Image 1 (cartoon, rainbow, N blue to C red):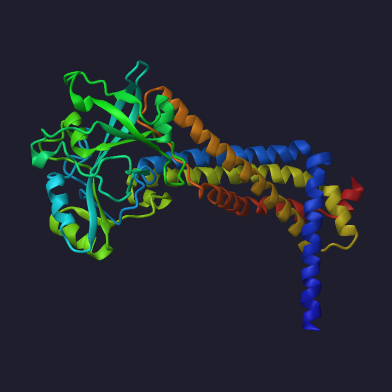
Image 2 (tube, rainbow, N blue to C red):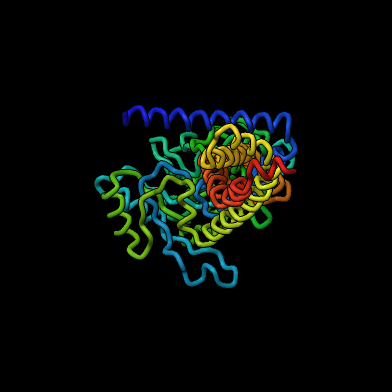
Length: 420
């Protein structure tokens, strides 16, 4: 008997779900296409705005641009004395080449490389407009490593221009471009590029670059940041960071415990942490990014819930006669409310999926506009998790909004509708 009751209950709910979808399809195509479209579009635009703002927050956190296959990252401690005062640059690590060599000498460490990132301009040697790219300096080795989402295979192992700290060794003149950087420069392997510089001699060898490889970014983030890998000392010389061997971080490959121990020995006062996945979780480690993402979430839920409540309430009010018919044929109040709730949720999910797609397109548009105005790479980043995130936000907003259309539906009766 219990099995029969449970089977009957499942069949009843399946029938209500099918009826809800049929009514929603008919309303979208025949009886109320404008109201259905209004709900979908309102949710879609709200979710699209949420996705774009979240993408900006992710770019602020650097959670995608820092993609690497290293095991440990060494960086300055947060809250440096001059990092957020008077607009001074964030603190950097010093003596990075020397200390990285010491780290590489530890057992269990495969490789260690300082990483320096500087915004620079490149231009084709045979003429053409200069373009802004993110120059990333590294010390490659014989193995393939990934830094800033780009493999280092195209760079000669070592850092010959460093020359034990004298910075007078022969520069390699090599540069590895990401696909987005190559597209922006219209360059391919073997092309010559120049680095326009005002404070250095034009004939300086390290200002002329040869593209040794164009690499497809290894990450799945779709940031479209134009990245160019070069040898660390050559970028330090260009950027004026060679005197103190400055770098933003030091990346360590190897056994996690050994890499952490070696990093702590080399930089006892620095932040030595395992490398994360470079995804949206990076926003939790950046105050400004987290605040931006949280504000976008709150605003998105509030606006989405308001739109859903208003448009769904109007639709239910217009469908009072249909609900009265359902009551007259024996559908209980709980069943009618379930139909309204399922219709509202389905409409919101459709709007969320459309909004996620629009948001990803919007991120590309924002980056294109930023690139046209000379911004330093991408200002917004995309991630596959944005799609389920958008749907989740829409569902939360719908849960908040659905009591209003349910209240309208609950007040509907056959007697009232017959008397109209």
